[in-house]
Each structure stands twice: as structure tokens, then as C-alpha cells.
Length: 133
Image (tube, helix red, strand yellow):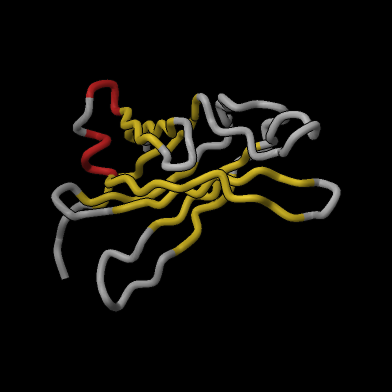
């Protein structure tokens, strides 16, 4: 067991220029994100930190929902963020892409922000800040 002190961090998300998955004549996508903390070791399980609110008719959403996680410096801590288009009529969702981030890398980046281009189109931004105790 390591005696690394765990720090609370706050994770916030926004995206730009997402590919519109709504389909022809169906308007613009209503994106939301699901954040999953990936397992750090074989005896851990991935855990879903939660999901953001749905941002209506936006391909460059800035979600207000933030997520708290615990992070120990020097220990790899990865999160996976999946983006989805909510389809209200069918109560289902369509994938808009996903990306993985390492919390330590984000904390070490300028402005504590890291961006990843999504294969399906657009860019996902993740910001991690130390949470005030």
C-alpha cells in the first residue's frame, strides 16, 4: 500500500466542432458526456464518476457539471470520457466519440487543460484543478 497523499481534483469538460450526429433534417446534436475513472490496477474496477447535463443544439458544448476525483501524485490515474448525442424520441443515445486522459498529464499542462481530437470529428477539452479542501 503506498502512502501517497490523495488530493481531490475537480474535472470539467468542454468540446468544440463536434460532428453533428443528429442526421439530415433533424437539427443539431444534444451532446452530453460520461466520465469513467479507469482501473489503476488489476484489483480495481473502472467506476463511472457521472454524466454531464445535456446541452441542447450544440456542437461546441461547455458543460457546467463538474466531477470530483481523488488523485495521488506520481500515480497514473486515467479517465475515459465518452460523448453521446441524446435522442429524446427513442430514449437512446448515439456515440459522438471518446477519449482517454491521464490526470497527472492534465495537471502538468498549461492552464491545467488538455485537448484531444476525436476520430469522429471535433475536439474534447478536459480541465483538472485541485479542489479546495
